[in-house]
Length: 146
Image (cartoon, rainbow, N blue to C red; front, top):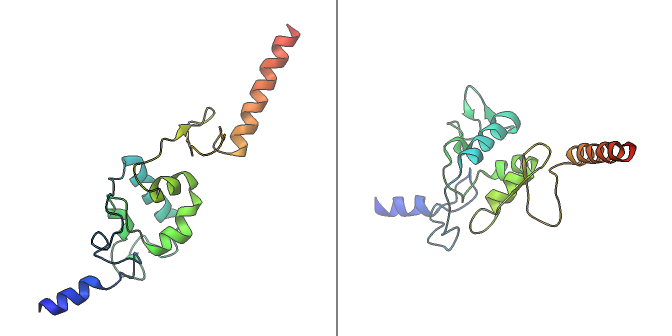
C-alpha cells in the first residue's frame, strides 16, 4: 500500500503540470500567501476567459471544481491557466510568477490600477497615458490663456 501511495505522490499532476512533492525537489520552497485582490483577480480571469471552465461542471478536463478557485498560495498553477489565461493580466502575471516576495506595484495616476515596477512606465495602459496627456495639455493651455 505504501508503494502505491509513493508512486502516486511522485507522479506529475495533470492540472498543474508539476510534481506534488515540489518542495522536496527544490521548487517553490518559499511560497507566499495570495492577497485578497490576487484571489479575486484569479477567479475573475478563470470564470471569464478559461476555456476549460464551465459554471455548472467546474473544470472540464478534471471533472471537478476548478483548482484555481481554491488557490491560497503561490506555486503550482493550472497549466492552461498559466499559459493561456494569466498573460491576459500582465500585472497579475508579474506578481504571481515573480520569485520571492511580491514586487511593489505603483498605482496608475489616472485610474488607480496596478502598474508593474519595470522601466519608467507610469500608466497602466495607452488609454490612461493619452487621458493624462490631454489633461496636462488642457491645464497648460488654461495657464497660457490666462
